[in-house]
Length: 379
Ligand code: KIV
Ligand code: ZN
Image 1 (cartoon, rainbow, N blue to C red):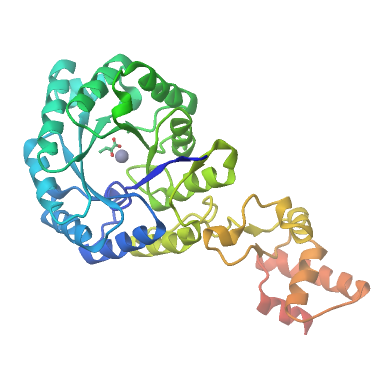
Image 2 (cartoon, helix red, strand yellow):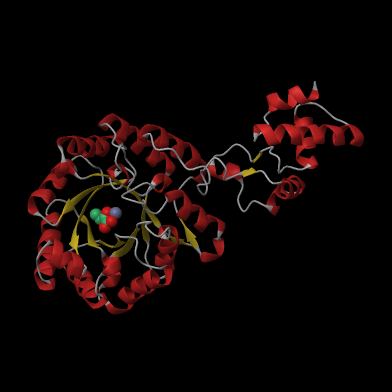
């Protein structure tokens, strides 16, 4: 039996913090409805105290979706929690996500405070949030660089105060996968009441390790992953939803499953990219333009013989129609013959050899040879 991993989507909160990616309330509601169809478990809809627009977005998303839990962010500050609680009033299932810096760097520099005072503030915040909702998530900001024993003390205290989920964020994307995995493992082995809450992971991608760290987190006991569509988010972004979900699906032997309908991944990626005016890099795993495109002759030949030679997943599983063969000067005869046949042209070997020579001359100049170019070649 597979273990269920909860997908917490923060595209509309951490993702929307990206400069230039801000959405209107109406656009956020559209994205939230698509996330619901995608099958995410929790939608972090915004940070209500931050602006009237964000408050309204959380209210409207609470009204618009039924199945996912709607989550609102707050600092461990009474006024923030009140705004989050108010904004979530109409949610079928509402969650307040409150928290505070947990590393000494944050405690000293941001708060000019002490570990004990931070712990007290965290407990007060969780108790206050519980007066609004039964589902309270606590985030220990910069947990990736926090003292491990303090992190355990903090986790134990917030669970005792009523937190249902404890988020251990690698806020600065600092950890290596084995370090992050060991951190989660240590928490599981050293927090006496850990079984009373879900441990969540929230990784940033500053070293390009967010997906690897998230997988290390669930392999060590965490059961919720916080992630965004296309991996957007502060600085180098967050864990990419499509990457962690497909990693779990491709590697069934890990024994994890999610509620995500993977065939919707590509359409949702396109929607978010278009609305946020944030292009997806061509070589982005799963949803990039080249994720299922083959361009070198050796790869094309193998792929045309059997797609499994160069593909570990079926493009239709992520909502991409089909793989593509891109004709460039690195392509071989097999790919040219295949594309010509798709256009309805069949040639004997000597003719094809002649065409191939002309094709290479054309490809050296035009970089990529499309169907229109091929028709020209044939004529
Ligand atoms: O990266 C982070 O620590 C966050 C928290 C607010 C959860 O985004
Ligand atoms: Zn974050």
